[in-house]
Amino acid sequence: MLRVGVISDTHGLLRPQATAFLQGCDHIVHGGDIGGPQILEQLAVLAPVTAVRGNNDTEPWAASLPDTVLLEIGGVGIYVIHDLRQLKAQARPAGVRVIVSGHSHKPNICERDGVLYVNPGSAGPRRFKLPVSVAQLVIRGNGVTPELMELQLAAR
Image 1 (cartoon, rainbow, N blue to C red):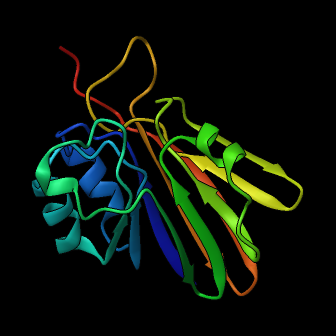
Image 2 (cartoon, one colour):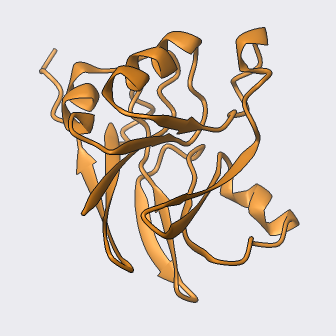
């Protein structure tokens, strides 16, 4: 079994609740709008990190980040793109079982044509009344089980 943590839209804020959730992951995928290199550094202490550049990652530190990444973890093809709407302009790579995105800040998991679409929502500053959330993929053999997790924040 492999556990892949999925996080997006941190916008420079890596909450302790997100860090706690990601403890013990075998890999972490960040769907963009990272907000600064310190976020990737903090995540890299927990597990190897794969990240894409979001539309707000415009500073020089983010220049080396790709717009999309195709990776394989435990034999499962995972395609990472910040804004899922950009995928329509591209062909979906062959062999992809999971597509990870961010951008909308709306957590969502759905399956279409045998492909899991996972948007963990935003783990950074709360936007409107949307939840603050992360996700995970549990990979067992050829099976992938996605799960969303709303982070419990301290009351103000």
